[in-house]
Length: 143
Length: 143
Length: 143
Length: 143
Image (cartoon, rainbow over the protein chains, first blue to last red):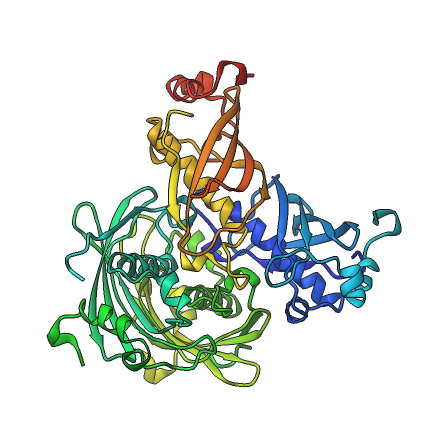
């Protein structure tokens, strides 16, 4: 998803904790914001995906915290599609401040389900969505 | 709802902000926690209310902040049913610390709707729920 | 503060609740985001205000909920400075969706304190900050 | 930390999202709640640790989501101290519902710093705290 301008915003006051920096749980929320921003930019708004009767739950995630972010500090999030086989999607995230310092790095793994949380293989059921996602994953990255 | 033991918990770390106290938005969440706790104790678990096909959206709220709460500090929330006419329910909240200091006071107003957010007068549609709530409002407090 | 472009963003997924709309507590956070955005635009970044040794706690707030906001929906927040006497600052907020529907309206009242939460009259102690805020309040609105 | 009663609470309404389950970011907050609960029970209240001039930032975490938690559902969190060498502390978490289903499993890694975020080896600087933590880690688990 490298041709998409990185997601950018500032740290909100309510995201700080009494250490005076963005609370570590908020990076997980920022990953989600960036994920949805990239889907929007890639022509697959997440509200439209849910409108197709699909959910995209998070199966797994990790985050390494490298450098704190202060209140009102601007940060960027870059996402890479790491693997996609029509059933599960692996993404990686890099959060940087305006000095170029890496503040956090992480990954997440997702699947697609129907509204009863039953897994759906979208390659068959929603080929347009499958192709729209697949085109953003490097050839070597597809399973 | 005076016969019910006040709602109690400690301030979570992620609820603090860089002023070193519980962020003001979290009192609004605490009001909701206390509201649901009281409904549970009054024999009307909120998941059961929603299971009847009802929502109870917040129409209005206010909060006055009197005294900060620190991380890990225990607080209590007392709720009073102020007015209930089968369509809207007015509640008031008092948050105190273990010294008895009033930390915050507020009110909220709610209605009942169906799952399409269309208002429902539960006095007619759900008389059991109506009565269960009405019994917790003082006679002089009913509209 | 009418010459400043209204604050704008989309509803995040994690801000929705199981009613399928933005949770009511998040409007209080959005008020804060907008407040800090306006201070930034007015030349008084809030991190700079705190760098002067000041806090700006919330003394009181209210919110009326008129129309729900859905996930990924764009909203705007307009702020008006309602009253300012050097000790307390009253603000009002209007949240609208892209159809122009008013989604929520509210007010907040703030004071300035030192880092020990002792009230400070900034007219005397920080006249530049006082003037920068006062210029954004209509003459009739100053106490 | 196996002799300590597992941490327990219910899912709050504001923790649900429009999938109708607890949002995945909130498990990271629940890990923190449980961590602080265990430190309290182990005689090391986290506000006391911070009162010694220490912070305990999160360096890294991961979470695997196995089974969703619904609003008002009771869950338990068990923590194990996995590794502790006086500089970094590794913990693991297991979240279960009342049926005994594992809802989530995760780990976190922490260090101790002074209030300027400079790492501190507490074995030397705070031997009492070091011993209090070490006693809760199995012999084979100490580095």
